[in-house]
Image (cartoon, rainbow over all chains, first blue to last red):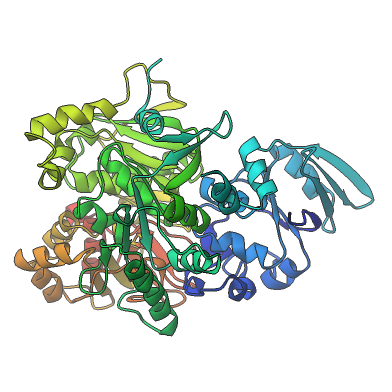
Length: 172
Length: 426
Ligand code: SF4
């Protein structure tokens, strides 16, 4: 299983789409690693320097409808190759969420008030995820907060199996 | 308790139910293009799993950048081409026969009511116009689909969207769907099937229904779907005439897929479109929509007519009706990309291509091209395009460019005037 803990990058906007996560012009790459430098290139957020901010983080915390738009799994791989295996949001687009679990990564949904609390911990926040207990802990600004989340049981199976291909190859 | 069309399709394709909320479905068609499939192919080859579940159920096209524009896109095309050949996939469409996937595959008769369809492309929802469950998926889902012929989904929740009244002259399916997305927002239908019903949908031809379903994903919908009826049967009849004794026979068979009157919906919405006027987007999200009257005067540098949303023959006819006898404004470049070779040749026979060219348009081969900013009309920073495509995300048609989504008639009118305008008073 992948690593599900680390420093947090906050992206404070709803509806961040897959074109912003990885622009279409890079979809001609046939290797996931080559996508790495272009992460979040078209995301215009005050104070964000995409690649260097991503380099410091292992977890993304964001608002609602993250990953909407195109079906490109490149939007998940570009995080994976940058060692980000967890995105925590109020909600996800269906395809992005499925792509995360299909790759053995975590798309965790929290209530808007919980996302607010994570944001309130400041800018230097460490998050630890306990997959089995479905809890996570955020630490920052001298405070520690605990949250419970709920995973779909099948999605959890996919994470344990290391992704959908491994699961499907065994079962179908 | 009655069932919705999606629930009926799910029940008839059930392979497994790994949890109370999740199902694994058998697939009727897996569609592939050269952007999202090659990585799946490479991965399958690396794993020693270079095979397909059923070559007859896999439909393949090179469409996003074609003919290839550089070494990288040429390699994507080659990986797809070699794979299709190795695996004896006969429905493979290459340069000369290729067109935009969601326009080409329906035209070839590959989509039928009650089918389950996936593709590594978010606008796969288009095919729901035929009463199919058709969903966009990522590359891993695609890979498993190719290998095993299955895909996992959460159980569908359905949003019923009644479109009632009479669509005014000069107002199109594109205006209707832009208006609906504005009302729902880009997140309004997330994880839901959008079932389009009502007298307006019943009166629409298949091309309009495809435009409607094409943009379901822009409201977050898993797919769009229309009830398969006589219009569907007439469109499909050349492909299904061996299975049915008559069109009537097909129509009554299709009814088995219709949602039951007592089906349960997550939401039910009604839109009366009798007073609708043309709409267009203004920002970088498909729900940022205003009337063309509000946007009147917004200057454009380029007009783009094409794509899986509005690059079909009826769209070209509408745009040509505006352009006939007119020229593009001197400040505007016009690009027409007929969505398929059949659309192109029909437009030629009908004299439409001449109308576009006389107006000053460049006519390209069928391809996605500029729709996703990959070729054939990429915008420069600061440039604005009136476009018949489906997505106006920041950078979509070129870094720093701006796209206003609208109907073919509205786009043509913007080309003639040099700014967004109400085509009905041109
Ligand atoms: S025309 Fe545009 S939206 Fe449609 S499949 Fe091609 S790139 Fe995607």
